[in-house]
Image (tube, rainbow, N blue to C red; front, side, top):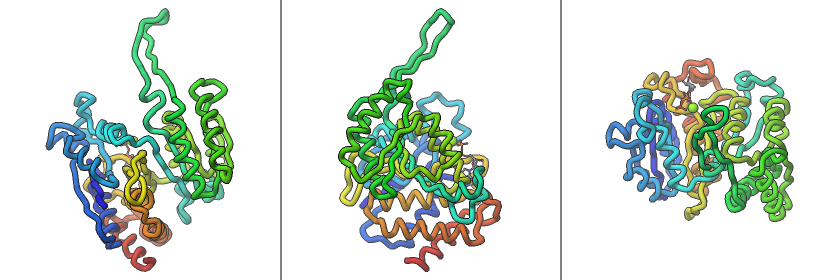
Length: 355
Ligand code: ATP
Ligand code: MG
């Protein structure tokens, strides 16, 4: 199996180093790692944030372990040269249409959540966000109108696009608590009407999964009022962008949560995907050993689960992380003093006592 490792910018390389240490500690057989440049570092070395060698390396791999991109020194560059273009390019070039973001409360860290501890403790959900369609990829432009210049963006979803993301979400729900909430705005949007009709059709193939529908405004409210009611949330690109950030904020620290972006291509043991922490390159703390590597380490766990068929090891990493967080090893983001490296070492220590 091949993993393309793209550490990127800022704290990306620092946290990726810790996930690689964890991977090394598992001593999995027949694994080959390739490392490539992406983001600001790639622009500086190769003149492009997503060099073709990096894209080819990702294409040839079974999974991509991604750090973060973003570099303040690149802020004034034209858009196509900015680091952030690299992740957008990877998602579309690799056909990664399904973004999975688990959000679960960590025992002992309820105080990080802006919600009441009893509500925070009950959070255990997965947002499945469509990543290749919606208003982000529709036609857009500017035109003259009676009211002056007018900006416009077309929102659309076709049946095929909704079907494939719906299957991803139903399959995920099947492996969890078998409850799926499809979030749309079907009372106002035609896009959402088709979305809902397709989801209802696909549901016939998953009679064991309980399906309900929620308007996005209500979903936003329910997420903070009673987040424990959600298992899997299925939604489009725009609503998913907002709700997945909201769901992670409900858990607490940005340094703790991972994500997977999956495509259609199957690997020998799972689905091809790109795995990354939900946080960015955090230039404000880069190079100081203050970055929490937990989100990156949990991204590795998702990679092992979804692309390499290593559910056992994925679960072991997740338990090792949970044990580390309930111990007294806390990074700066959790009010402690442990460094990036110390947190990585502690996770490996806990992993060894589990595996
Ligand atoms: P980007 O545009 O790359 O997403 P951003 O500024 O939107 O960057 P982050 O890079 O995620 O967002 O950083 C937001 C804040 O969270 C920063 O103050 C950063 O220091 C902090 N932060 C992000 N990731 C971590 C981490 N792993 N450990 C500790 N603090 C973090
Ligand atoms: Mg950001």
